[in-house]
Length: 468
Image (cartoon, rainbow, N blue to C red; front, top):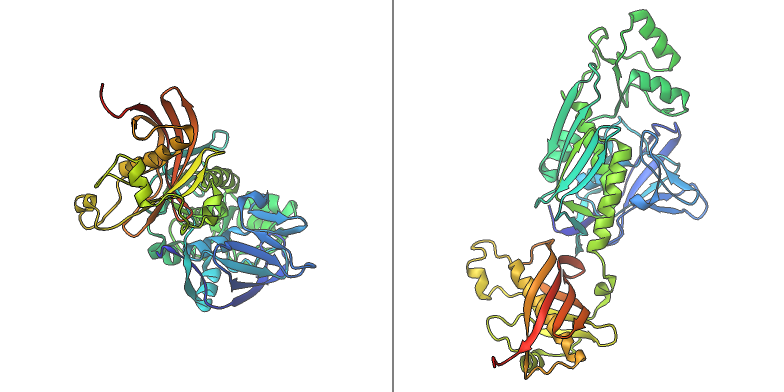
């Protein structure tokens, strides 16, 4: 999948009924500018209010995910969002004439078809990514739910469902290549529920637009044909056969043997889209639902915000120079091949903060062996570059560079979040936390553009340049 952001080449429209509200609605998906993300627009309300698809705006999880800003709410957003993620869209405006997208057949396939009709175009900006570097875990012991995110170079999702119900049993499924598998293997999977849930949801005023053309109903009760007929009539469901126990006539066929599990995975992709960034990592989920998906999305959103900490980086003018290469050579003792700072572009003596720049060239010697055929700038050298940048801060503390050296004494909380390659420009954002006696503590982050690629808490000691 492209590393650049993508949007739609044109527009596409569909109309229909909303699953839970039963409201008729027309949905039009439209292109959007870089870094817009997914934005729902209520064109039926005064001022056409916008509702960004972010977990911060989730207001209800009653059998679906509802987001809102003020009085503008949008129900059941997960299927639309899953289709956008699965088809590689990053920026899109979704205009609605009511408060819920048309449900279609209960899967994401109708929305995939819309995206294909509109077409996809690449944009100039790099994708916003959440890179999983450490295990992130969510557990709900009461529901028996566990969701874990693990480091992985690709976005993968594995789901297991087990409702302790013989009508469904235990099912599992996994998506390992979003681009190759989503459209054919997961987009067609339809929403489902048990018959006893249908009765409760019907009494609660939900699923007003639900029928056997847009949902699978699994019979989990031992009913006679007469009882089944009465229940179907009571719920105002068409006379298509229901799926479930052998006592039911299974004339409505499943699209996949494990279609319920596949739809749960589809829901998860849609709910996790509310993180607001592409996920680079593997997600493992046992017995997930919308409530657990959103709780987990909140954890991921916080991690993403942490990775994006320091938004001032995006507005830095990298053409400015505070210290050029010749200045650095006069200050730093390092020389080829170990001088890893090319230029200092910010030097804030008041706040003890510095921003250095390192241009990554393919001609650097480490790429001969790290790695042949796939050059990656070593993480230890990123750490060294941050440390060297931090050393420059000590000028503001009066360090005599002609007499002193700064040597590493420790590294804590080191994380490498994304690989750095030849052609990248590494920005080192370093803050002096403490300088007492001869001990230095630094907080350091490294970016490529506005994407955090590494971070560390560094400590060093100031020693005499000459051994006495």
